[in-house]
Amino acid sequence: MSMPFYVSPEQLMKDRADFARKGIARGRSVVVVQYADGLLFASENPSQALHKVSEIYDRIAFAAVGRYNEFENLRIAGVRLADMRGYAYDRRDVTGRGLANAYAQTLGTIFSSGGEKPYEVELFVGEIGDAPADDQLYRLTYDGQVADEHGYAVMGGAADVIGTYLEEHYVEGAALADAVRLAVASLGHTESTDRAISADDLEVAVLDRTRAQPRKFMRLRAARLQEILGDQLAAPAETPPAEAPADAPPADQPPADEPPIAPPA
Image (cartoon, rainbow, N blue to C red; front, top):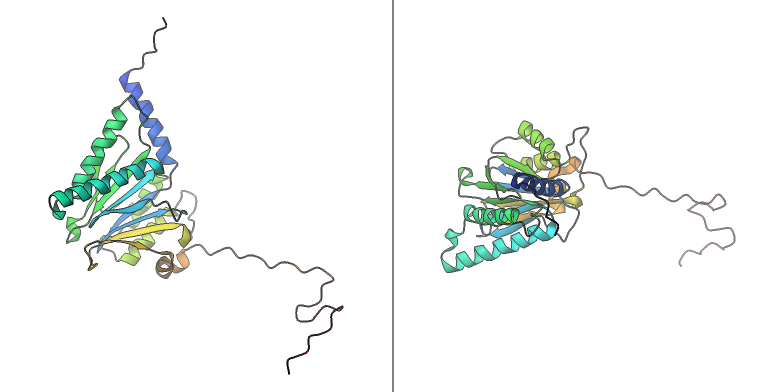
């Protein structure tokens, strides 16, 4: 009988971590910026059906990067957990910290299990309070680690390059328009040059504490983004006019073999 190959626990965990990191790095980055009235979430996402930023509860939002089917399962589980806790106890008992801890336990268990592959996802769980000092933002990695972020954060894709740009340009207590411009500029920033992103390719949402409704989550549509960003957006490609054949008559004259159309009486 052949003996199975032995792999040390350290090497096994390293291989699983490398596998998850490679999958996450292939996704487009998600940026979170804290502004005067709440938290702004932004990502480059051409799909109009598959959202990377979503609402979890009244004051809590969720953002993810990586495999869509995996983080969508986590999002649905978070919504169910929040609804059950709010219904069984009180809506104030649903907190971003509680959801982040639940996600951390799930991701950590999956990563440590040898029976299935690790999730190729990273998550943001954001919650706004009554004042900017009460805002909370948690970043969760594929292995269940939780980090408490402040001011701004980025994950997925070229996170290091975008993070450096945010560190250099972030201003605390900025207005919403300034936060949107900063987030979109950081998403288009690369080591070699900066590129403009079309409004149709952006997914932007906010948790706005100034909203009168109990639910503070709101998406910024393309028209609103165009109003805020203006020249910062990529111009739509213009289709060049088709060239007329050499023997075609001028555009304002009828062809030679057709009589001119008489004007109406």
